[in-house]
Each structure stands twice: as structure tokens, then as C-alpha cells.
Image (cartoon, rainbow, N blue to C red; front, side, top):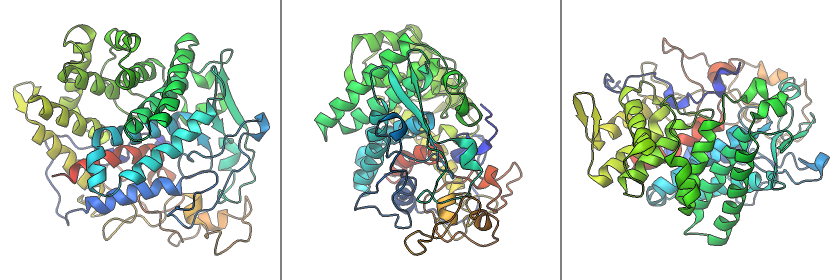
Length: 463
């Protein structure tokens, strides 16, 4: 999964590399989960591309990339920039939307109780609307807007950027079953999130999801072979996990026999959970269906559940925090426990593990630093992010050129815009964090690192 940009990995909720069964809490003030939840959703408003809505709360941002897609005669405005740059990459964006939608589906009541449900739904819709537009025809999906290499040669606000905004697509002749299936999963999950709130919208998303799944299954191939420019940034290691993940979400959304047959015939070994590997996420959905009596606990479905639980027993990094919390709730609802060798772990123990891992991110760690910007007494102030590090365009409207912006990159001063909710890459193996803007390995946030923590924070607020 190493892509040459370490921060691209889903490690923001794995900052501690702590083993669940050996964690000892660090001294420090109890984190404010409610404030962290609010900030995590604000972060996505700071990552928005396109024409911003009247209720935009991150006021240092402005409209950007309003001509995206014009080179192909399609509207590809909107969506999210992936991290500290100004490119829209479809694979991590789709994973981001899937995780935000899963947070709503799994923890909607908790989000509502915290007063954040509408903000969470807005975050899902902003991404889902773009993904639906990117699905320009039954077998055409736009998977990237902008060029990573040229973008990285500039340091500009998204409102100023004048680098190429080339749009790249996969189709029947140039397949991308990995990204097509992930986009299907995202839109199916978003449909689940909106089913009870906006049925017509959910139905539209589901139509896109089903067509994309058909496209993915009928035209197999990794998308970086069709769009080589993505390889160095978000190259995919395979498509079987995305297909399994998409089928699981489509079964949750529709109850369709074809999707049931697919997930009953596929499993996948437990490995990790990230933007590039969704087996554990799909297994979590299958395990829930078994615990609810919607799938028989036999065959490959039972193997999926077993693989998930083995993974949770062995997990030592907190990339699994979301599935840890989700499976804990599924076990509690079924009156079940997790068997780890000779130990029996009740759901409350799993939630305690998740809490300790989130607390580490929010400041209860040896460095006593919160790795979420804006939370706690000490947090990163020089985040590797173009928009946050450059003057707000509303107060300083003079254009910042491609190369002129590097003067701000190299300044030894805090960012002029505090990017609340951004989670940086985190400390090294010695718990050391170098708060410099040039240190993108540690200092760059991305949507795929923040999205999984939204639902976890909402759930922790319930206790």
C-alpha cells in the first residue's frame, strides 16, 4: 500500500500503534468528544471544491475549480480535495463518503443527540452529489480531476489555482473495477443514510450504485492501468475487496438476492482497513447481518465473521477503531461477546479500547499533543495544507502565484487559518512530532483519515 506519500495511508486513527490488550492510559485532561466531533465535520467544509453554499461555516475558504469537467463537457464541480493539495481523486473520495455515510447509518441517533446529524448528512451529500455527477454514463466514471505532479509543483490556494484541471475517466475499454466498485459502495451507503430522510434522493443514489456495480463486475481491471497518473498517489492493490464491500452495501440497501449471493460466496482474509483495503469493513457488515439473523452463520459468511473477529483480537493499531466500535454494538444488540483465544471480551471492553485509542489522538499521549487541530491546549499549528497556510482570499484577494506561494510554505510561523478538525499524520515510532509545514509525512491531513473518526466520536458521546 506504500504510495510514496505516507500520509495517504489510513493512519490518522492509528497514531499510537498500540496493542489493544496492553494499553495503559496516559495522563492528560479528558478530551472533549463533542467539540472534536463538531470540528471533524467542519474539516470537510474546509476540503470542499466547487461553489460553496450560503451556510458554509469555514469562512476562510471560497469558491474554486468552477470549470472542472469542462474539458469533457461534463459538470465535475464539487466534491472534496483529498488532502493538503488541490486534486480530486475518486478512490479516496469514495472511501471518505462511504465512511461518512456509515457513520450516519450506524450512529445517526448519536449524531442527532450531539446536534451534528445535519452537518454529517451535508458532508455525505456534498461528496455523493459529486460521485453521482462523475458517473456520467452507465459505463463511464470520472476518477480524477487535476494533475498530481503539476499541482505539487505549486503552492496555491484552491481559489487561485491555475494548474491543469484535466479530467480522467474509466470506461468499458479502459476499466477501473476497483474505483467503480468503491464508488458503488459509497453511493449505496449514502442511500442507506438518506433512506428515511429523503427517499427520492436515496433512490437516485441507489440507481447509480447498482449500475456502477454492474460496470465493475463486467469490466475488471485496476484503474491505474487506465489512468497511469494516479499510480504514484492512490494506486490500488486489487479490486476484490471493493467488489465485496460494494456488494455488502448494496445488500444492506436493497436486500437483493444477487448481492446476497455475492457476499455469501466471497470472504477475503482479514488484513487491514483503509482506503485501499476494505475486506474488514465488508466483513463487519456481513457479521452484523449474521448477528441480526439476516444471513446464516455458515459457509463463507461464517468465515467472514470469523476473520473479522480474529482481526479484532489481533489488532494493534487503531485503524480499526470504527469497525471495533461498530462490531461492539452489533455484539451488544445480539447479547454476544468476542472470543479471543482463552479470553472473552464483552462489548464494553471493545468500546474501552476504542476510547483509549481516540484519547491518544486527542492528547492523552506521551507528547501531550492533540493530533486533531483545534482540540486541546497543544495541537499542530503548521499543517501541510495549501488553503490553511495561505492568507484567506476574502481578506487578501491578491492572486498568489504558483511559485509565490512557496514563500508561505517555508515560513516559520503558524498557519493563518486554523484548520479545525484536521487530523495530521501523527508522531513517529518514538512519539516525536515535528511541527513544520514541509514535513508532509507527519503534518498533512486527508479526508480518509478524518472520516472514520466521525462515527466513533458520536458513539463515545453516548457513554
